[in-house]
Image 1 (cartoon, rainbow, N blue to C red):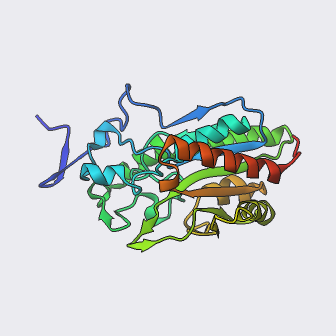
Image 2: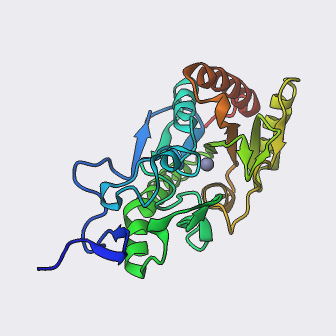
Image 3: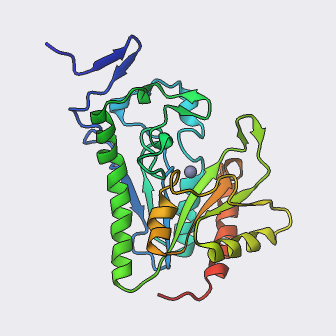
Length: 272
Ligand SMILES: [Zn+2]
């Protein structure tokens, strides 16, 4: 009798990709919050969760690694939900960790299924077979990418031009270096939209706001802005907030109100 678990190395049991990646009692790959929201903003949150499908066990990672920023954007989903309610905007978010597939990366990016994240090796991502990789894409990446694309197709078919806004958080210290920003606005082609947000936030004197910092958008490294916004000629940005500022309910409420104010004043009376 063969074991359902293929053993890749002495200490790393591997999921058998002939079996489903998600069990029937596990959450679907993505969820939608406030789906009928009336705002011209479409909110997206790709790094919302650090959940790992049971089939992948702990991915070979100790508990503390699965809790830190390499697995998810701490506070981002709470902030995105706040914005969804305060702006009355639909929100699409993923239910699984970016360590399995990163839904904000193109399939060709090495970080799409990272073998190393920051300085942490991800044992369950080492030497993936084509079948294992395809299963992750089909189970987790494609359903999310497609539901967002379908929503945008529908809005555009109605003659609407939504603002695509991704909600993210970043770690205060990366590769041992302290980052100076409280938040950043990342963008590709949507220069006017992004600069208006940066100006508004920077008017708050106590804030240091990154302009395409702490990351910049590149089609080889990003998915949401290049594909869902720039390729459709829709205005699209990512909001990045330092995660220690939104890891409490008080912080989420404060940044939620701040970003609501600046998004509303930037978009102004933009009507459908
Ligand atoms: Zn992120």
